[in-house]
Image (cartoon, rainbow, N blue to C red; front, side, top):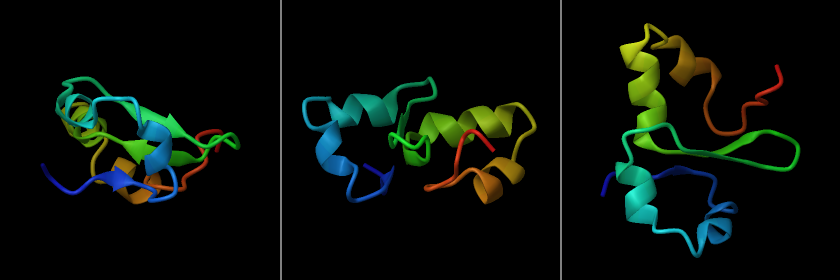
Length: 70
């Protein structure tokens, strides 16, 4: 499995999920902190951005810790 795009403090909150399934899902899967900052993104996050003309802007501006309300 490739390196996770996950805040290490968020990882325990993913317990109970099949992490391999999240990482291999073809769709965009992400996790948010209560303040709506990005805490986890699966590879589908970047793949979707690339397929829809959003790269490299999405990777540059919407990485871990980005506020999704901004």
